[in-house]
Image (cartoon, rainbow, N blue to C red; front, side, top):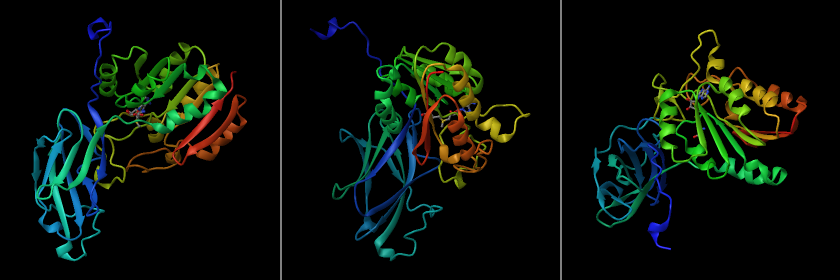
Length: 341
Ligand SMILES: C[S@@+](CC[C@H](N)C(=O)[O-])C[C@H]1O[C@@H](n2cnc3c(N)ncnc32)[C@H](O)[C@@H]1O
């Protein structure tokens, strides 16, 4: 069959934001620090600034350059040593002849990873690979529980909190239907356009606590719910003091001044109750960010999850007549499996 007899069009996925996976390729490179927030690449403005700390013989005379996957030279501007990086003062007291700090800006190509290398020897130092995040924990869980619900569990996937749509995109290749709910208008609009080529994805705009009953009404059969809606910071946050670093966009919280801070930020309890009352078929519910429950300032200052408490929640699940079982998936996530009602 020749290529032009194929009756479909391929549409490349253009995620605007990708997470940069960094891999240190040389033992003299000790750490990498990205300016600003967590290392997300904005492909519309594909430049990042980072600081590298070296320790070892010969590291004071490094000449660093960058190339793309095919070896093409890329713009890489060195700013000297830069200021010491907060929280990264290690190596400051080591012998001066054996340490160096380099601050630089790298301009990414349209696609693919960037490798930093030492020009005199060609030694590779660091690779920076922009990626669509793959939540392996989620799809591993689906694999693990698949037998219990086979073949139906791959019917419906519902995500609360779309962000960029990375998880929804992957889910659309596993499940018959994917529904993802996002409160922030800009993020919803961006995800709608990015995911438009996947005709089994529905992007819903709104507060998941309010939108879920309508979404559930349209589902037929068992579902996997990925509960990940919560305020994840915006430009008002002091990201410099955050151990986590945040996303490169503003995320949303419910705008209702009558609600307590935590109730504006975290709709989880309402989501769980709605699933239990409205979704009659069996379900697997995966709660993300379990470790943040009951805490404040967990990932950044101002984050508030005090409207819930883990012990009460697990007690509630134990008592619930629909509970098949519940268990921690890992330190950050919790699973609730529901029988049909
Ligand atoms: C941690 S991010 C979601 C990440 C996404 N699930 C993924 O796997 O890539 C949380 C998102 O929830 C959104 N959000 C916050 N409160 C919400 C609510 N009440 N309803 C729906 N979305 C909400 C935020 O705007 C943010 O985009």
